Amino acid sequence: MEIKKKLCVISFSLISLQSNAQILTARQQQDDIDSLYSKIETVMPDPFRYIKRGHFIHMVDRLKKSITSSNATSKFYLNIAQLFAMLKNGHLYIEIPINERLKYTNEGGKIMPVRLYIDYGNLIVNFPYRDCGIARGDTITSINDVCSNEIVEKLYSLQGSEINNDLKDKGLEQYITPLLWYIYGWGDEYKFGIKNHGYIKTIYASGVPNQKAIKMINTHKAINRDFRVDYLDKDSAIMTIPNFYQTKELSVFCDSVFKQLRDKKIKLLYINVRDNYGGKSSNVELLLSYLRHPTYDSFKKVIIRVSKETIIYYKRMDQDIYNEIKDLPNGKFFELKSDKTKSNKHNSNIFKGKVIVLANYRTYSAASYFVHMIAKHHIGNVIGTTGCPSVCSGNPIQYSLPNSHLNCYIPTGLFCE
Image (cartoon, rainbow, N blue to C red; front, side, top):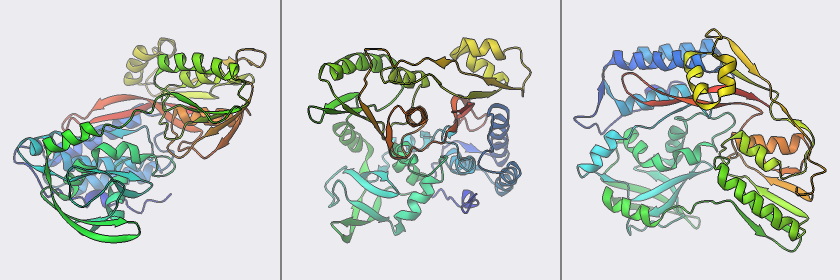
């Protein structure tokens, strides 16, 4: 287990601190750390899959001892997020606070003149907010003499993931600017190192008012990745599945498209689930029902640790599970076995041609489950590797820390394929 950055958690500095930002005493910060740790041990079935419990407790204690003064919520977030990211669980998430940032911009504070995103460890310009000599697609090599590798490493350290950092790129995208403000205090003036067409140049640029940035963002709204099919030639097609959240939309899409595939006598179907971050396992099974498959179990088992919080969650989300666990003692591990799904090989309405699924490290959660099912049951071939192991967490509850009021999402189930 590599934990080289274990003490970076106390190295973040908050240069720009607003006078009326929520200030937490040292004791309040320590209590919130204890509160989140206790909730994770109470709710999560297997929080220490990737790190030894004793080592993590040691890191919790070290962070608490390092907090000797009051801090703004934003600085506390940087510390606690990096600590719990060490658990390497992509379903365990602490929401990024924005109140201090909003106050700063509402009072006239300026923001970075370009909108950035991370792509496989590189800082890339999505678009500039004004004409400053920086173009869409430029690679940022440094900002204010801080190397982009260091910047990205600090951003990555705030979120957990089981396999590598690729999963974090999308999750961080809309928060890069406020996070850099929290970490470095950058606001009014910038010095960029830019790489374009193999050449590196330095560009100086001033920040822009937030309202101007918002207008530009609205004109550059990301194109939604809809469910779609494209026909490559008379024999092949590629289907894009951007998520497994939208049950109604997926059902309507599948009904329509799979009829088209049969009518057109398509022999080869590519299913693209790259950059699909997941959704509902029931929607995975919905899509599988249109493909020729043998009898299968959806999961070998789903493990739930019984607690007051999980009982409340499943009462709202799944009445059958709730009825199974409602009278069990707290701390009890409940194993849910899945029912078998019967083979559909003799169904005339399914697609019976060759299936190839396209995946990458940003294929996560339910989307990763879909890929694994395709390979495990020989439904088709897979090109690429997902960002999620065959045993992973899911079904998170929301928990607000008592002092900082940071919203945390804590998984309640362990899904074993």
